Length: 114
Image 1 (cartoon, one colour):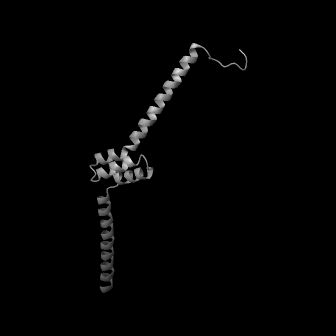
Image 2 (cartoon, one colour):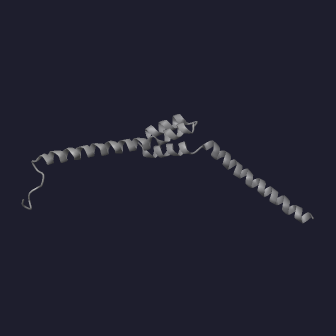
Image 3 (cartoon, helix red, strand yellow):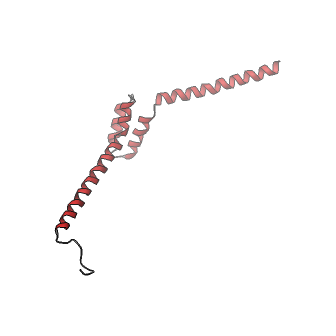
């Protein structure tokens, strides 16, 4: 065997190695495609699980997200964010701070009058 010769050329092991390489390539491409599909369907599955009110919107944004990826990010945000609960929490925080300020104001005025 010389330094310029290539091992396994024109032999049975060459055919077997090419077959194994082709199999590994096909399996890798299929696994990557399935993983991409599962990741891309994540907003729809989350919306179904939480019985989201905007299921149609999330589904459409997910499908459009195959072309424009920023739309898919928007679908993720809508699917994982419950807007109604977020607005209620913001309202409660806003009113909670106002109540605390009112009570602290009443307490300071009560101290001065005593």
